[in-house]
Image (cartoon, rainbow, N blue to C red; front, side):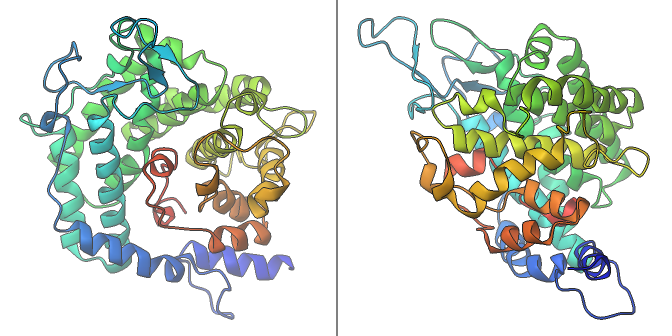
Length: 382
């Protein structure tokens, strides 16, 4: 495909009109049926926040987010003692109701925002704003802006820095909030909430521990800080995140062939490789600008986003080529419409990425997939 044809595709994907032939990749047209179906369904859904459920094992209050580490189980040798880890195997008895509520909101708000972007009908924007206000503005239902009690482990920790990964599901709702013309006072209150959360993420012990991890948790920390800083207008932090992408994340995590060795060591290497690549893509899409095109940036040895996506592309195209053992759980449920394919396809002029993205499942329903697939409305991103 020549550059002119690709440009037509990219302009169509971004909703830009031009006088020449209709683009082959019109993202708005592709997405409209699924967006409208979801948004119309969600109009009947009322907000559910952290105040709707609680756990006796939480040491926090009514407005504090609480979750328990997924891979921690009772010790058969000491059933009432501290839990033990079984990597990659989720314990269904752990408390995850707050996470489920957050994921639910992260499905509803972006879908309604995307529908508003397509139709300009205020009912969709107002419904998205209703859920956002319940979570971040209204005194009776809002969540406290910290994660002191996330990813607790029975008998070991009342909360851990690793819990910060749970709020990756706030990145797309934040992007939605900036595009639905919220009432000024509500938008200001939301920005105050996220400014407070950023302060906690960047200064608390848990936040610093998560920042300094070496795998997908570090990627998700930077991706969130970048998104929330962009939303609140914190240029200092967005600059910090761009620098950390170049000087820490890519050098520490990406191998010369574009893989992520820390993810390949896990019991779910395929799923974790996809997840980390998508987290990198979220960060790159958030911060890329004409003056600093992170999609095309690379280290002197060639490592960067182009190489990382190129490494995974053959295994997304044909999972049978995956060189490692299948993941211990959910191997059959991947891949879906990975945002890394779409974002990279547009930024790097790779029509084969866009075509593969188009063919993949855009509406997965498996809970574990939704938990590890935080970008569901690409119309809000391009």
